[in-house]
Image (cartoon, rainbow over all chains, first blue to last red; front, side):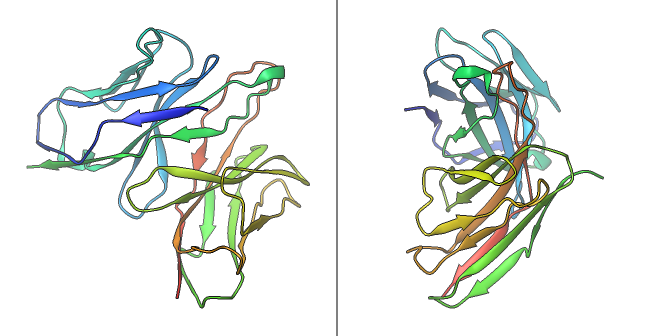
Length: 117
Length: 117
Protein backbone atom coordinates (compact mmCIF):
# COMPACT_ATOMS: atom_id res chain seq x y z
CA UNK A 1 0.00 0.00 0.00
CA UNK A 2 0.89 3.66 -0.14
CA UNK A 3 3.13 5.04 2.56
CA UNK A 4 4.96 8.23 3.48
CA UNK A 5 8.06 8.39 5.67
CA UNK A 6 9.25 11.66 7.23
CA UNK A 7 12.44 12.36 9.07
CA UNK A 8 12.27 11.81 12.80
CA UNK A 9 11.70 14.87 14.88
CA UNK A 10 11.65 17.04 16.76
CA UNK A 11 13.80 19.48 14.83
CA UNK A 12 15.13 22.47 16.76
CA UNK A 13 16.73 25.41 14.94
CA UNK A 14 17.81 28.95 15.61
CA UNK A 15 16.12 31.79 13.77
CA UNK A 16 17.51 32.32 10.23
CA UNK A 17 18.88 28.77 10.02
CA UNK A 18 18.35 26.57 6.95
CA UNK A 19 15.60 23.98 7.21
CA UNK A 20 15.30 20.59 5.54
CA UNK A 21 12.63 18.05 6.43
CA UNK A 22 13.03 14.83 4.49
CA UNK A 23 10.06 13.00 3.02
CA UNK A 24 10.08 9.82 0.94
CA UNK A 25 7.11 7.91 -0.36
CA UNK A 26 5.98 4.57 -1.71
CA UNK A 27 3.06 4.53 -4.11
CA UNK A 28 2.03 2.98 -7.38
CA UNK A 29 1.16 5.18 -10.30
CA UNK A 30 1.58 8.93 -10.23
CA UNK A 31 0.72 10.46 -6.87
CA UNK A 32 0.29 14.11 -6.10
CA UNK A 33 2.45 15.25 -3.19
CA UNK A 34 1.64 17.78 -0.49
CA UNK A 35 3.12 19.48 2.53
CA UNK A 36 0.70 20.55 5.25
CA UNK A 37 1.45 22.60 8.37
CA UNK A 38 -0.37 22.38 11.68
CA UNK A 39 -0.07 25.07 14.35
CA UNK A 40 -0.84 24.11 17.96
CA UNK A 41 -4.50 23.28 18.53
CA UNK A 42 -5.48 23.96 14.93
CA UNK A 43 -6.36 22.06 11.79
CA UNK A 44 -4.00 21.49 8.88
CA UNK A 45 -3.20 24.14 6.30
CA UNK A 46 -1.92 23.34 2.85
CA UNK A 47 1.62 24.70 2.54
CA UNK A 48 2.52 23.59 -1.00
CA UNK A 49 1.90 20.87 -3.54
CA UNK A 50 3.30 19.21 -6.67
CA UNK A 51 1.31 17.05 -9.04
CA UNK A 52 3.93 15.62 -11.37
CA UNK A 53 7.60 14.70 -11.49
CA UNK A 54 10.07 17.62 -11.37
CA UNK A 55 7.37 20.06 -10.29
CA UNK A 56 8.50 22.47 -7.58
CA UNK A 57 5.92 23.63 -5.07
CA UNK A 58 6.63 26.85 -3.20
CA UNK A 59 4.89 29.09 -0.70
CA UNK A 60 5.94 31.52 2.06
CA UNK A 61 9.63 30.81 1.42
CA UNK A 62 9.18 27.03 1.63
CA UNK A 63 10.00 24.83 -1.36
CA UNK A 64 9.82 21.16 -2.27
CA UNK A 65 10.61 19.37 -5.54
CA UNK A 66 8.86 16.20 -6.68
CA UNK A 67 11.71 13.73 -7.40
CA UNK A 68 10.31 10.58 -8.94
CA UNK A 69 13.71 8.94 -9.33
CA UNK A 70 14.34 9.09 -5.58
CA UNK A 71 10.63 9.05 -4.59
CA UNK A 72 11.21 12.10 -2.43
CA UNK A 73 9.60 15.46 -1.68
CA UNK A 74 11.90 17.16 0.81
CA UNK A 75 10.76 20.44 2.36
CA UNK A 76 13.29 23.31 2.50
CA UNK A 77 13.40 26.89 3.68
CA UNK A 78 16.45 29.13 3.51
CA UNK A 79 15.84 31.14 6.68
CA UNK A 80 13.33 30.01 9.29
CA UNK A 81 11.47 32.29 11.67
CA UNK A 82 10.05 31.71 15.14
CA UNK A 83 6.59 31.83 13.57
CA UNK A 84 7.45 28.72 11.49
CA UNK A 85 7.34 26.60 14.66
CA UNK A 86 4.67 23.98 13.96
CA UNK A 87 4.16 20.36 12.93
CA UNK A 88 4.79 19.62 9.26
CA UNK A 89 3.12 16.72 7.46
CA UNK A 90 4.09 15.24 4.12
CA UNK A 91 1.24 13.52 2.30
CA UNK A 92 0.43 11.88 -0.98
CA UNK A 93 -2.73 11.30 -2.93
CA UNK A 94 -2.73 8.71 -5.63
CA UNK A 95 -4.60 9.01 -8.88
CA UNK A 96 -7.24 6.36 -9.20
CA UNK A 97 -8.40 4.48 -12.27
CA UNK A 98 -11.19 5.98 -14.29
CA UNK A 99 -10.09 9.59 -13.97
CA UNK A 100 -11.51 10.13 -10.54
CA UNK A 101 -9.61 12.87 -8.81
CA UNK A 102 -10.80 12.49 -5.26
CA UNK A 103 -7.76 11.58 -3.28
CA UNK A 104 -7.40 9.63 -0.12
CA UNK A 105 -4.50 11.37 1.55
CA UNK A 106 -1.80 9.17 3.05
CA UNK A 107 0.14 11.11 5.70
CA UNK A 108 3.58 10.81 7.19
CA UNK A 109 3.79 10.87 10.98
CA UNK A 110 4.62 14.57 11.14
CA UNK A 111 7.78 16.44 12.11
CA UNK A 112 7.74 18.93 14.97
CA UNK A 113 9.77 22.06 14.21
CA UNK A 114 10.76 24.47 16.96
CA UNK A 115 12.58 27.68 16.07
CA UNK A 116 14.28 29.67 18.83
CA UNK A 117 15.02 33.42 18.63
CA UNK B 1 -15.40 33.93 3.75
CA UNK B 2 -15.43 30.37 2.50
CA UNK B 3 -14.22 27.63 4.76
CA UNK B 4 -14.89 24.62 6.92
CA UNK B 5 -16.35 24.89 10.40
CA UNK B 6 -16.29 22.22 13.05
CA UNK B 7 -18.11 22.41 16.33
CA UNK B 8 -17.59 22.26 19.15
CA UNK B 9 -13.85 22.80 19.55
CA UNK B 10 -13.77 20.72 22.75
CA UNK B 11 -16.17 17.93 23.63
CA UNK B 12 -16.37 15.80 26.74
CA UNK B 13 -18.42 12.62 27.05
CA UNK B 14 -18.85 9.72 29.39
CA UNK B 15 -17.93 6.26 28.21
CA UNK B 16 -20.87 4.44 26.64
CA UNK B 17 -22.46 7.55 25.13
CA UNK B 18 -22.70 8.26 21.42
CA UNK B 19 -21.54 11.71 20.34
CA UNK B 20 -21.93 13.57 17.04
CA UNK B 21 -19.30 15.96 15.68
CA UNK B 22 -20.41 18.64 13.28
CA UNK B 23 -18.69 19.59 10.01
CA UNK B 24 -20.01 22.23 7.61
CA UNK B 25 -18.38 23.68 4.50
CA UNK B 26 -19.40 26.54 2.22
CA UNK B 27 -16.69 25.93 -0.39
CA UNK B 28 -19.11 24.07 -2.69
CA UNK B 29 -16.80 21.05 -2.55
CA UNK B 30 -18.13 17.67 -3.60
CA UNK B 31 -15.89 15.50 -1.45
CA UNK B 32 -15.68 15.50 2.34
CA UNK B 33 -13.53 13.48 4.71
CA UNK B 34 -13.12 12.67 8.40
CA UNK B 35 -9.70 12.00 9.92
CA UNK B 36 -8.54 11.07 13.37
CA UNK B 37 -5.26 12.36 14.80
CA UNK B 38 -3.54 10.84 17.82
CA UNK B 39 -0.49 12.33 19.54
CA UNK B 40 2.72 11.83 17.58
CA UNK B 41 0.93 10.22 14.67
CA UNK B 42 -0.21 11.22 11.26
CA UNK B 43 -3.85 11.43 10.31
CA UNK B 44 -5.91 8.33 9.65
CA UNK B 45 -8.98 8.33 7.41
CA UNK B 46 -12.28 7.33 9.03
CA UNK B 47 -14.89 7.94 6.32
CA UNK B 48 -15.17 9.89 3.09
CA UNK B 49 -17.94 10.98 0.77
CA UNK B 50 -17.80 12.05 -2.85
CA UNK B 51 -21.44 12.95 -3.28
CA UNK B 52 -24.63 13.48 -1.31
CA UNK B 53 -26.17 10.28 0.09
CA UNK B 54 -23.03 8.27 -0.59
CA UNK B 55 -20.01 7.57 1.59
CA UNK B 56 -17.28 4.97 1.98
CA UNK B 57 -15.30 3.55 4.86
CA UNK B 58 -11.74 4.65 5.30
CA UNK B 59 -8.98 2.81 7.13
CA UNK B 60 -10.46 2.95 10.65
CA UNK B 61 -14.25 3.11 10.27
CA UNK B 62 -15.13 0.66 13.04
CA UNK B 63 -17.10 2.35 15.80
CA UNK B 64 -17.96 5.40 13.69
CA UNK B 65 -20.89 6.36 11.45
CA UNK B 66 -21.57 9.26 9.08
CA UNK B 67 -24.32 10.74 6.96
CA UNK B 68 -24.28 13.03 3.93
CA UNK B 69 -27.78 14.39 3.49
CA UNK B 70 -26.59 17.79 2.25
CA UNK B 71 -23.58 18.77 0.19
CA UNK B 72 -22.43 21.22 2.88
CA UNK B 73 -22.65 18.89 5.86
CA UNK B 74 -20.90 15.67 6.87
CA UNK B 75 -21.50 14.87 10.57
CA UNK B 76 -19.55 12.11 12.29
CA UNK B 77 -21.01 10.01 15.10
CA UNK B 78 -18.60 8.35 17.49
CA UNK B 79 -20.48 5.39 18.89
CA UNK B 80 -20.02 3.53 22.12
CA UNK B 81 -18.52 0.70 20.06
CA UNK B 82 -15.39 2.78 19.37
CA UNK B 83 -12.89 1.34 21.81
CA UNK B 84 -10.58 4.33 22.09
CA UNK B 85 -12.50 7.45 21.05
CA UNK B 86 -10.40 10.13 22.76
CA UNK B 87 -8.62 11.94 19.92
CA UNK B 88 -8.49 15.07 17.77
CA UNK B 89 -10.95 14.82 14.88
CA UNK B 90 -10.44 16.72 11.64
CA UNK B 91 -12.89 17.24 8.82
CA UNK B 92 -11.72 18.12 5.32
CA UNK B 93 -13.16 18.76 1.87
CA UNK B 94 -11.92 18.91 -1.69
CA UNK B 95 -13.16 19.56 -5.19
CA UNK B 96 -13.54 16.76 -7.69
CA UNK B 97 -12.27 17.18 -11.23
CA UNK B 98 -13.84 14.26 -13.01
CA UNK B 99 -11.81 12.99 -15.91
CA UNK B 100 -8.43 14.52 -15.10
CA UNK B 101 -7.35 11.99 -12.51
CA UNK B 102 -5.27 14.62 -10.73
CA UNK B 103 -5.87 14.49 -6.99
CA UNK B 104 -6.76 17.87 -5.54
CA UNK B 105 -5.68 19.26 -2.22
CA UNK B 106 -7.90 18.93 0.80
CA UNK B 107 -8.92 21.86 2.99
CA UNK B 108 -9.20 21.21 6.69
CA UNK B 109 -11.41 22.53 9.46
CA UNK B 110 -10.04 23.62 12.86
CA UNK B 111 -10.77 20.25 14.49
CA UNK B 112 -12.72 18.96 17.48
CA UNK B 113 -10.89 17.53 20.48
CA UNK B 114 -13.01 14.73 21.97
CA UNK B 115 -12.30 13.42 25.44
CA UNK B 116 -14.17 10.37 26.70
CA UNK B 117 -13.85 9.38 30.36
